[in-house]
Image (cartoon, rainbow, N blue to C red):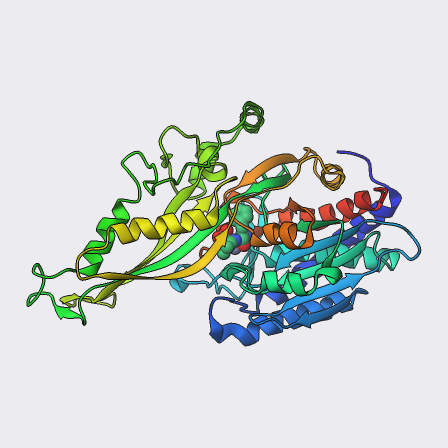
Length: 469
Ligand code: BES
Ligand code: ZN
């Protein structure tokens, strides 16, 4: 742990003194079911955006809810300390959440946050607890404490909170294009990633990309009696599962032609750095209720989630899926298929190759239709920037153990969009844990991670304020 300045210490004290308030404010946000994929929840999305804008206004920000062709964003500005030359940081988070289903697997209501005991003390259980409402509140609460103690911010700040990250950010790029000047900053801080362990903070320097398609195989002109026709006509569910089974060989290697062409091997230096992290494979698998490592043969678990591309079927639909039995041959079957991509893979090329793979296996009398849900490249951010060094120092004032550099298997499209459209890099600092059940029933955020996250953002601002610009 490094030493703390008096300016920062007073803010850290304020954070601890007001922590119950910070928990209440997070719970209030978690009660709003801001599910972006489902149009039925559009009013709740707007309600969440408006409540965040009101909150930011109350701590000295000029905040507004900004319409897009999809869900709105919240944008807020704070000029920082009057008359001082300080860095300008764009803070990004998303206030939309994934759908909560299957509802019956939750121990409490997904939008009725519960604070219950956990192996690390206490945890907040709710949809969005960590992805990403709890995380975006870590920086908002740090701003609040700084405002309450010092009446201003130590750096110039722009905040951008998105309302459709969980549905592939369809309006984001156009918004960034249209508001380039307003959103320009020196660097972005993204709060949507994880820690290495509950007591080891992390900065994420690589994210995987994502290609996502929904493929429907259409067969007979209508649903058919499975006794009258079964065995004599094409069954789209039988056919699609046969095609999908060919996506991998028995060694877990993806069979789409050219899939691995641009994938690079890890450098020796990177392999050594990852080894030094001492990854606990058993704990990782246990966090998913499993014991047996599985995936592309000859690769470690860390490679499989950070540096190797994958292909997964995320959903499958067809025929009769209601209660009881119905003897039917459905007229079509749908699979949702996603590929996680790594550095140097071209998402468009992978998308085209995947579609061709399916088309090449089209059974007679059938036809495919496709919906495209996302096409983002993998991202790497520089590890030698002064902003990253400042963030590391900030984290080292809050945690006893220094931060480590890690990869991530997930995707955060905004990081690539900011690089491409606004022309600066992001710094990925987050406080989630592997076992937080993101996108799954009983999603949780450790109370300790929330509090340390708030403290960390205060410490990071303090370090950033001392960078020369
Ligand atoms: N917070 C996640 C990304 C993430 C996951 C970071 C795991 C670190 C570890 C983010 O909200 C998310 O779920 N992103 C989507 C993006 C997609 C919809 C384009 C993802 O990765 O599936
Ligand atoms: Zn998510």
